[in-house]
Length: 125
Image 1 (cartoon, helix red, strand yellow):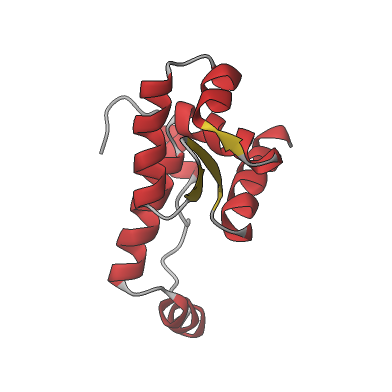
Image 2 (cartoon, rainbow, N blue to C red; image 1 turned 135 degrees about the vertical axis):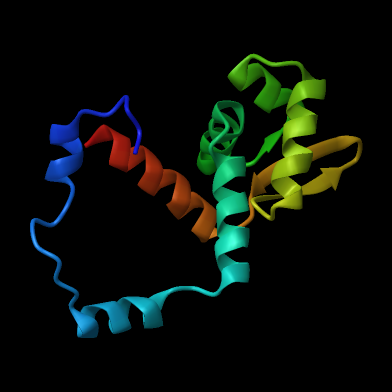
């Protein structure tokens, strides 16, 4: 038990009686994703949790942007943006296309857009 937490707060979080609801436990266990999916989803959320990457994803939610545009939008060097974009691409959050010597990035799909919208909507409530 963490001595930093107040006993009142801990007591409020506990059941006052020990009662297990077998049907609810069974349903919850059946709904759990497998360990591999949990690991991949956790890694994905860790990538999105970085403020710089979340800002990049938010910018890309509006439209396709080149690395130079993204650097101007969030106020970082093109090199720093490119580094973050490589990581986002490795985690299948963004994709890109080349037009001559310019790389244009966009969100990979609607799932990524939904993830960003949901997270930001949640904190606004």
